[in-house]
Image (tube, rainbow over the protein chains, first blue to last red):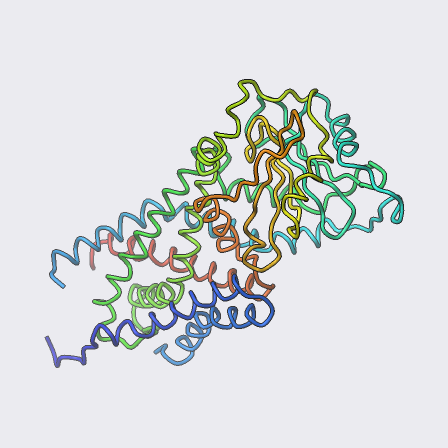
Length: 62
Length: 362
């Protein structure tokens, strides 16, 4: 193997997906249990998944 | 991770995906418009309509039922539901012993007994729903799609495990767009798989629960409701039933403060052979999805029981909004649609990666 590239730890690999999953689950449940403002909070939390995708496509495409 | 462990997870990911992909693609494609059923039907079916006597007295439910059944000779009532924004009662009736899933649905103006225009049940949406639910195959089709949902969950779990070795050297979200197609699509697959994971697990798992609706309701009737039917050995004959209006009124006094949702007639999926099951729901966001029936003896009109549904029926009730995405506003539905589209890309790229791998390397 050529010069060994930097290896990420498991935590580094999974922290972004875990964060998105936690936000998504919180959003799904907040919108179900709450109303009014909670619906909006839940939708924003779930929207983190879409936002992360757009961010990655904008900055991590090479 | 040991190479053999990795190979095992890889095997699970490959086969759980390969078997289910074509069905999951069908579910995603039909599910996309179904998310917006309410909006689409509102646009396609809305028409100016006013009740015949907006301020006049309303027919009682027995009169509405009798009018509805006169228009469908030979059919028996299965369900009655109530529009919230117009004085319309909907009667669903079926031919006794007829094919499952075939029914008549009649909205009726409660001020006159005249037919009212339908605001739901557009044929195209009904077709998509049927395809999405059971592929026109009835219960076996539903259970089959439930099995595909279980494979989806296996694919998601194994996908998480496989994500680690692929992402060891790549920052989250990297897409090597200038590399060859296989690398590029692997990166899209990993990115979109990672961001949709939690949502897709919820929609997949609740979809599986929804495919079990028929056995769940049958089990409920065979256990919790069984005790109530002991006194009788033949179904309550339609000609000798007590007043429906009186049954609903009686049920209301048993569950004060709750909202009337629908009535299930004796012999229908949501009741026993002997009772009117009058379903109510609460008015908080959570309890709006949870129904409680009051069972009224269809022979005597007496209250037989208020039967709070057991945990597995509650699970079924809550699985519906979490699967449909219809419990927030339009924004939630749009998110459902975007994540559905992302899922289509995950499925498509997964299929592509498998096909590309099979071709011998140049």
